[in-house]
Length: 465
Ligand code: PXG
Image 1 (cartoon, rainbow, N blue to C red):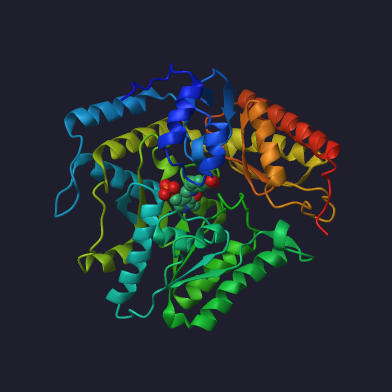
Image 2: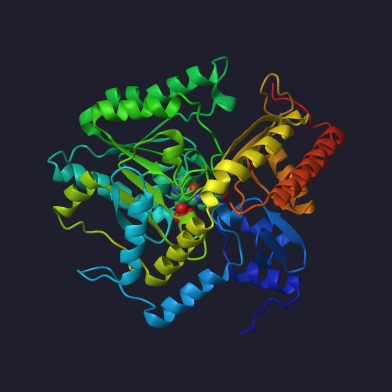
């Protein structure tokens, strides 16, 4: 076996990677030709690759490194826990201190009566837990036929059979036998792309009322729960019109349907509050968490559950759990992450200072000839690339063609920004300073200018007919 180190030439690392490593959501044949970008180090908000290039990470990894890279306190917490108790399970009436402490901390942070935590190692696993938990809840209450979960098209809830089925990604559903039975999808509140001549507020109401129509068609006695991300993340940072969530809440309340807020991206300060539900006034029965819970330093997720649902579930043996539910090292890392976020007032800073500053700067990009709508909530934002902002036109090419061109120009400009179709999205570490934000905007502007020049040169500023 080769000893593989950070000091090997990039081409050798890429060749071994292409030979043996299957990547998620990647066409591996294309990747083998081009070679994967090898990230070797990171500190603060900056990534370094194997050729020594530096990038400002405006995606916080994959929407998760909320406290930034290089916080040794988390490494030390992991090392301490590994020495003391590297593993024990939480099955069969056992527990351990890190799981106890983290569950208590989460109950304290979470709003309303969300006081109980079921641990998992990822958002996908947590949403699988949620599917089984809400169905078990209704079965325990003598209504086993109440098993349908309503979700939205273009939602992302994970990649396992259950969570991928909850999600509304058609490319995922086309592979491997998804969705599973008992999941129903309604429209998403994406006004820019789908709102037509309606005002955003009218459109928000219309899309929320699709929930009521679905409940009426399916029969309320069949519907267990509705699940939604407060802001759709992987779907393109779709910020719903202000009318949307209050109407969804009203409909869930009226029909007695459980509401699951998927906080995997919106949680832990991303929107300027601890949870996106607080930003949008949502009162969920269950919140899905992962990512920012440990700032990505250790794989951990979970479901935070309200008193009533937890009480009903406690009435049976919930035959569910993962070997790593409440993994002590992951819990210790998450606790240290939350301690730092608390002590450094990171969420308050996003709400009062850096979030508004980023928003103000980000909105200036709307003046760019290539940019339609810009949105920013807390530190989660998107901009739409369009050949004609007045008519909210899409390009005359496959969705994503222009987004990918822009993404490449971002990399070349030292910026990691993600393309979702022809939207560019950011979700930077919450510890970004004003200087970091200035650099981000400078580089994004440069990438947009280069993209625009390239599109003009190649005659690509054409709207779909
Ligand atoms: N819910 C939401 C809202 C998510 O964003 C998951 C659940 C699943 O979490 P795990 O930990 O199982 O991945 C996610 C994950 C992207 C991208 O390309 C987004 C996610 C994952 C991978 C890629 O934007 N979100």
